[in-house]
Image (tube, rainbow, N blue to C red; front, side, top):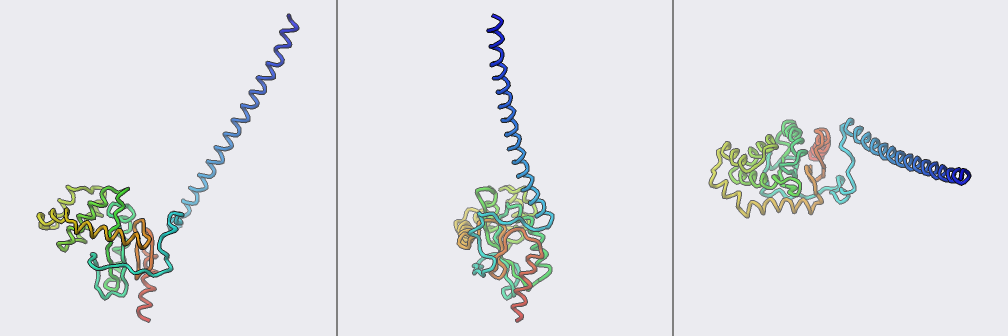
Length: 247
């Protein structure tokens, strides 16, 4: 009996040892995979951090492959659109914006700086591109701005919306319309007007034809510039166009 019992213990010990060895290898492999994944994430975050530190926007993704060519010059319709600046300005800056887009709000000080720096030499034209699938108030805000546009107060409503972007809603649009001294009966009527919605849709359709799918997007005398760029990027294009106009 003793001989049979001792013989049974040896295979059992071998099985346990083998199982422990296999388990250790599996754990080691999983840890190595996790470590590699963490290193990949750290690399990506490091690249993003470098881009942010340098003040440059990150490189466009493959989804931007169909975007307008910055080296080309496009014709963008401006008839009937809200405008800041004279018709005979040497440079026309067309902006496609979404009132609920945080990047559109972020670029507003830069646009103000452009107007202060260049004055009547630059005309700014507003075009609607509400990204309704991700910004539920973008459409209603655009409608409120267009309704104010019908009474000559587009830019005043535009400024109020961007200054209070975290409070967008029907009650606020009514409050701001009264603040601007608008005819409220006409304002409410225009909020429901098919002509107003068609105007906004026409801008969005034009953006799609140009290849613009995100906001903010700009065309400086037809030359494409994407994103909430710093003032220097706008200045470089504007100065080039002003120099061409002199020549």
